[in-house]
Length: 173
Ligand SMILES: Nc1ncnc2c1ncn2[C@@H]1O[C@H](COP(=O)(O)OP(=O)(O)OP(=O)(O)O)[C@@H](O)[C@H]1O
Ligand SMILES: O=C(O)C1=C[C@@H](O)[C@@H](O)[C@H](O)C1
Ligand SMILES: [Mg+2]
Image 1 (spheres, rainbow, N blue to C red):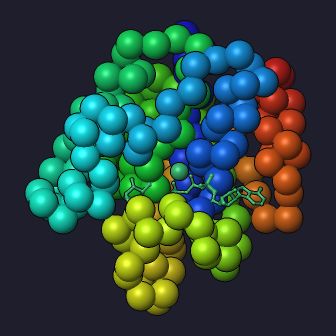
Image 2 (cartoon, protein in one colour; image 1 turned 90 degrees about the vertical axis):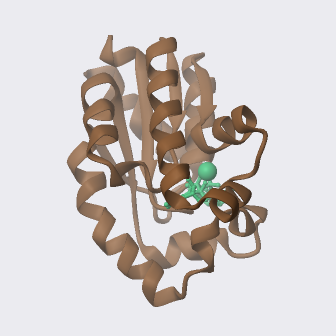
Image 3 (cartoon, rainbow, N blue to C red; image 1 turned 60 degrees about the vertical axis):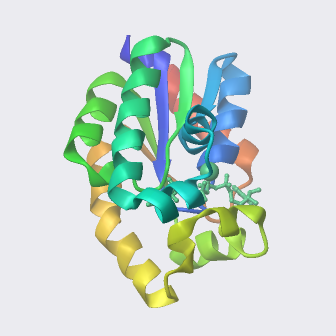
């Protein structure tokens, strides 16, 4: 059961959406990006959800829709939002029900990859100062590690190389 559900976790800009989609295509699994799923289900952008109802409300939606996706589907890849590991209930669910890929790497690389992309403006937390964002990454890193079935360093690797590594490991499980 657990093998049929893959989740991708990591900080903003680590490549969750890119890698998750490519991985799903290789495996012929369904693909869901949790951020996009929430926006579609709620008919509102994440930025507007944060602005109108606050982060706590967004976190409630995030937990609700994560559970819904995991319960509803098999043969699925879910790319999560960067803050999914904040809540213990999400970490427990991810660990118990999915094969979790943590996209690790350097903060500078993540920030450079987001620079100049549309994604940057879509993420309310990207308006935090660089020091605050860095501290957020440092405080979250152990939580990503706690849930990870597989940790991959994504610095200086193409998306194809990363997916190949995941598939190599996944095939051996
Ligand atoms: N391995 C890689 N090498 C080079 N560029 C990459 C790599 N992975 C992702 N990118 C690029 O980096 C940017 C961020 O990637 P992506 O949107 O997949 O990250 P994310 O983790 O989903 O971010 P967010 O948390 O903001 O949703 C995109 O422009 C993407 O094309
Ligand atoms: O790192 C975070 O806390 C977030 C990351 C994004 O993927 C979105 O889920 C949202 O902007 C919050
Ligand atoms: Mg994304």
